[in-house]
Length: 109
Image 1 (tube, rainbow, N blue to C red):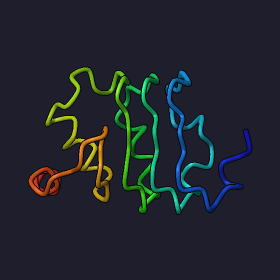
Image 2: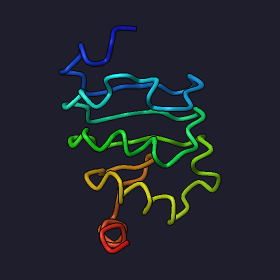
Image 3: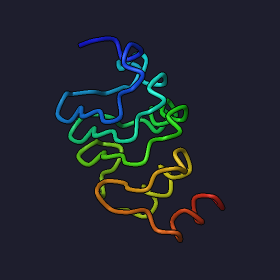
Image 4: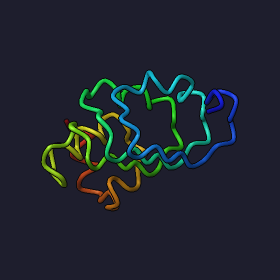
């Protein structure tokens, strides 16, 4: 795979089912400033700090993390708020649009 920092125009990255535990293995992901969609379902991400690595990806609108240990209860409001606190620009999380109430709850948390 090409180093991610050599793909500055990349908008969609699909990494489902790759046994990824830590985003540090995706060296250069913070350089993908045009990244809008990141699909990482069915991996092994379990640490909230891993999502902090995506903070530089300010154009990220859609994130798919279904099937990761980070979210043992799919659709949990607490899980969605935790992610929105870290990534407030998301418009869609795990295939479900972010609603204004969730966004406000994340800001207040």
